[in-house]
Image (cartoon, rainbow, N blue to C red; front, side, top):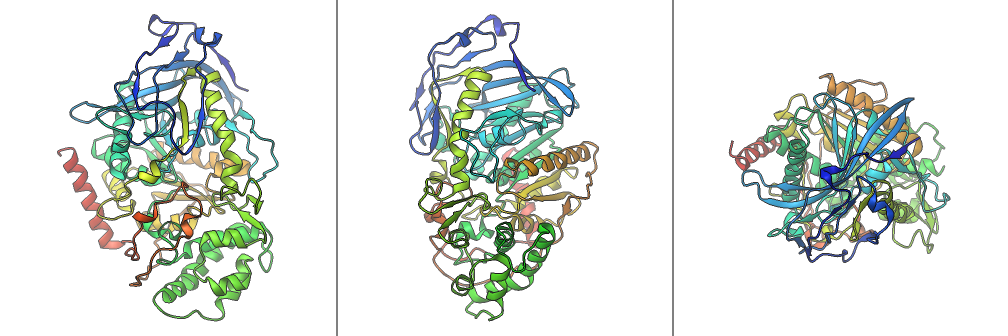
Length: 601
């Protein structure tokens, strides 16, 4: 059980800190999913450790603060994990990211940090968590994954009463690491500081550089230079982690481990992003088969999901993907393949005959008549025309309102951070994002990850994926990461679950065990090995195509979802095949040179 107490001391000799500054363009966000918090006076504001922040924050593109104040609400708590009581301090508030060299204020980051009491900083790990979008606040990881509290969603069920209960989290990582949940600029309550605006940091490179400056500032202010440091990014947070890790390593900030939750490492390889008319959707096939197996539609019925996924990986790489590439190049499909695909996935033969390069949107709409399956978690379904299906993804709709209300009340009542602005759960940054990176219109961050791992030969990576994720399919992630050919340093762990595997009770328990093993291994200086983890082998060869087709509108079926890019930023021609071998090594070397040039080394 978790019990909350208050500090019996006054921070800085003040009972309550009142911030009287104003913001340019402040107030609530325009567009996106958001929630509000009350700024009315109440007795809680008189309690020690409470922070009443009177600044007004905005997520709009051109908004900026005239100035910012670094302050936090401070509360003490206890949590019992595996029979061990852990007292800890929670700090919720803002920290200013300052540019390297000039120390110019750039942005005021909102964050919540959980620090175990009476632990030596030199050996106590610290992990920085963030979601993706871009434009998504960290509340999903904060209240869904490994923080001290979590929302009991019951996923994949849609029958659990809402709003979901906020409960003590038996799978919290606080017994392993201190935890810092940080919101990107334009999300939560994070905002740029003039002369910068939020839009100034809405690009792949500017965003990662700003996160670097936040991490460096945090470890300096909190004297955590000697602590083992981890990054934990979800979805677009995966490519952010790759670029951020390379930037930090180039700045002599040594990292110990990276955790990638359902990452979109190479946008160019995901047919749901660039459009299935230009590249193969072969990496989605194992997830289609997992979904068919979940709904008992495969022929024959399959009970062993893990073994079935091995079979489907092999079929996709050896038969399906080559056939799709041949079709895109002007060839024909062998008549024996569509019936096999129908048996493997449960999707009617007619759909495979008409849409052999199967897009996820069509699969989700047609697998079960009059039923829409979730994009983030295909095990979640809803009748067409129902409220849960109305926004295009029932697995997102079923959880969003509860996360929106819970983060506001939790900050206000438990952590005692008071602010009248809107906490922006999902902002509009994604519609204004500059996805260009390293000469490509869409980011491929595998070379950045490779650069970080070359700069730090001890750095290890763990990726956590869901078999039923139809946004960032697990097999695509495996193929992306396998390009590095670092099987001893890159581990993959897959679970029955969706994009947010941690929402599934069984997957969260299993992933906590795997995370602890990963931390133990990295802290010991060697990769921890567990029989349930798979190392990544070298990928199959990728066939290049020269077809020039306009991208399909299929990927627009759930706008403002991660990963997603505006149609105007999608390449009309198919992207080049993923770099491998010597070509990839040249890209890695180019990234390292660029990093050195940025910091003058």
